[in-house]
Image 1: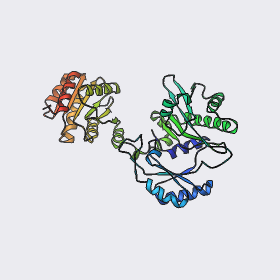
Image 2: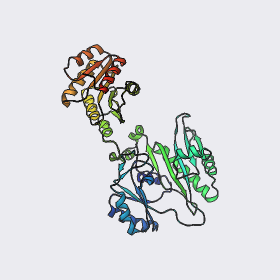
Image 3: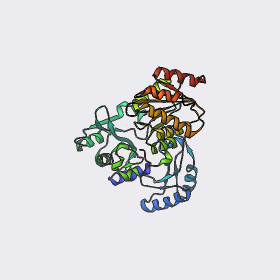
Image 4: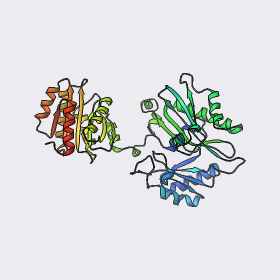
Length: 400
């Protein structure tokens, strides 16, 4: 589960991670109030107005702007709030900005030059260990750094049975070229960051940039935290941070029915039980000349209610020209699924795209008979080859 920058910073602050202080606002007037409060608390006279959406690269799209005084805050916040922010991570459609974070200026003058670093912690699945990834090239996309300056990427692997040891935090800080008070600050920063990562069971904690200020403090200027969905039942306070306005409405609706749904850009809707079969089905659609419009796994509970919910969600995509249902009847009998398909079709009413139903497993032949005798615009298939041929005809408009 993704959360906003301001939420991530609030969590990290509880673990002793020094952050760029800020206050969230959802109107220009509230942004001014936030700026006044921030000025009283921190003494800052310059404010950074940051769009709060679930995507990176906000600055590149105009979602991060400077207000040089309180008088400019309302104007700057007004331009960002309500905008359709397009970044490299949102796609061309962008995301609407509902909130901004009014943050303090941390690039103030001092005895040394400020310097930006990159830090992240995540699970390395190849080794089964946590890994700290760090770079002296903060503020840039880490992919770009890895491509152009691979020598500036530092990795420190952590045995999860032991946890982060002090020497490892120092090793990372030394590798970043820090010394003196700045090195001590970075060591403390890394240790607190890892403690937060473990305690909240995050799948990713990313700080970019982590700023060494002019007076040698280390501050999280930006923060991205991804929470592990499967662990949220242990963290109801974190689960409550979910912002469904940032998620695809169809995916939110699917979740309410216990369906696993991911929207894609193709023209053939898929409804499958089992992630492996779903991936094979998507491959089959491509080989048949179509493009999958979604990933939809109904799991082992395929019945009239889940099938109907799946239909309704798939049909909301105007690009869908055909629907392929590919169910293996192991946990659930194929004839029950077939009856569920017919019942769901009748409940929805007229469906203007052909539906190919491939049911294989227990009572597959009975299921095919139910589909064929339904009198509906539904076509049965027993083998994958047969399903593929019918999908191909459906895409070409030749299935009658």
